[in-house]
Picture 1 (cartoon, helix red, strand yellow):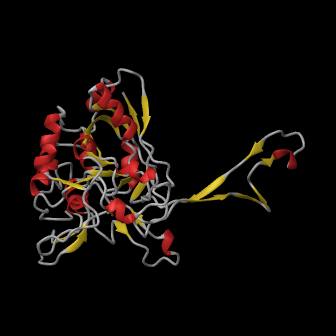
Picture 2: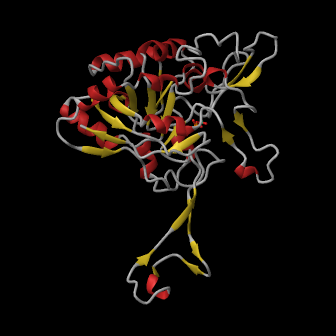
Picture 3: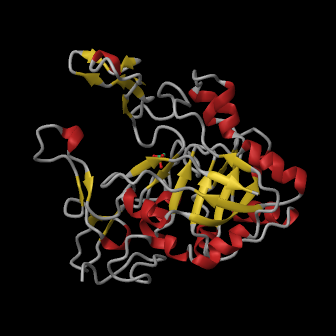
Length: 339
Ligand code: UVW
């Protein structure tokens, strides 16, 4: 047993002592059928930004836009390469490329190995760095130590994003239209405000539902045309108040399977001071570390939200597997909504 104590408010062990999926366990065949039942018009929506947005590194100075390269072919570039150069009887023309991609730069999933916490899980009085379900930093989620090339060292042998991909991430999703009620100014949405909005719009969330929050943030990003203004972004659109205990309790009690937003971190960012020693990003801690709830960020929900508004609906079928990239702690995603 890796741990004898679990963090207060966590569900560690509830899905099995070796579980690596967290609340994805709630995305059952029944949830897929419930999602399929929401497909009435045969319309589909792409829920991804172009992956070179937001542009620059105004949102996170450690994350940079994708860089694409043309793959080489011996001494030639494999770009508009005419195969008759190799064999005069061939008529093919071929292009091939490679990309340096920061996995969490744009529309993305956080893996459960993305954010952990310090916790004394064996009761010896010493807090150690752990991730969801007690998987250990250093042992299960390894850094670049000991590798000559640090870029090639990071490897989540547990909780890697490929675990999420293997579930196919499909089922019923519910959209909460925060933008309709909060506009485009920065508004901290606590439990009471969220309930008010959901009640006004008749939104009901059941266990296993994938919850999407539309705030308008991705529209502001798009308006900036790849030249984001950090100050404007920090004062734009609704974010969840991760310091509201009632909101975190609601995430637990609702049984939602994953939590998604079109903004940078779902919750308020830059991080705000809490009281005493606490997580900088309390909603990240609650979801990724305690409950095994994957977070989707910087999704593009605008056209879907507008359509659902027009139709007076809030449910749809969502399919959103990340890249099946072993050991990665996050992944770009091109989610698809069907209504
Ligand atoms: C932050 O780090 C603020 O968000 P994430 O890493 O989940 O994108």
